[in-house]
Image 1 (cartoon, rainbow, N blue to C red):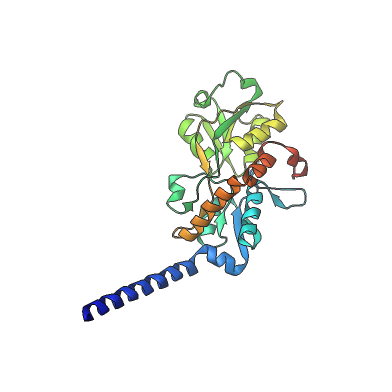
Image 2: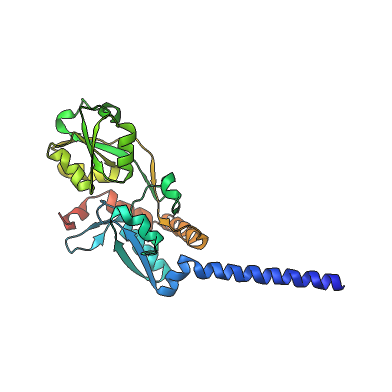
Length: 270
C-alpha cells in the first residue's frame, strides 16, 4: 500500500509540474501577450501591390491589411500596422518590434532557419516584364540568360535570388523598390524586370502599351505569415484562423477584391 501511495504522489507531482510548465508556455506565448496587451502588431512593407500599399490618405491598405483586420477582430483586439523596410523586416520581428510578419513573404529554407511560417495563404511565382520591342524574341527566362541583356529586380527578395540563379549571365541591377525596378524597363535602361506575378500583372495593366509580359511563373513560391520560433499556441491559432477564413468565404471575398478587379487603384498614391 505504501508503495502505491508513493507512486500516486509521484504521478500527481509530475502532473502538477507538467501543468505548471504548460501554463508557463502559455504565459510566454505571443498569442497570450497579444490578448493581454489588447493589440495585434503586424509588420509589413507598404509597397507591394496589392498586398500592402498606401492610399491617397497615406493609410496602409491591401490584401494583407484586410486579412490582418479580420485576424484582429477574431482576437478581439485593435490592429497596429508597423511599416518596416524589407531588409530589416525579419530582425525587427526577432527583436519584438511586432508580433507577426504579414507582408507577402515567400517561404524559403534560409528564412525558415530564423523564423517559423504558418501554412501558405497564397502561391505566386516570378514573372517577367520586358521591353515591347523584345516581344517574340524573349519567350522565357532562359532567353534572358545572356550578357547582352540587363535585368532589373528588387534587392533582397526572391526575384533577386531567382534572377541570379536562372539568369546569372545577364547584367543584373538591384533596386530598393519594385516600382524603381519596373520603371527601368519603361525608361529603357533595362531589358526586363523580374518580380512576383501579382505585382507584374498590375503594373502591366497600367503600362501595357510600353511593355510585353511573360505571365507564366517560372518559380513556385508559397507566401505565408511569419512568427518567432518556439510558439506552438500562436501557430495553432494562425492555421485554424486561415481554415475558418477559407471555409466561411471571407478569404475569397478579400481575394476577389484585390486580385480580380483594379477598382482599388483609383484610391492609391501615385
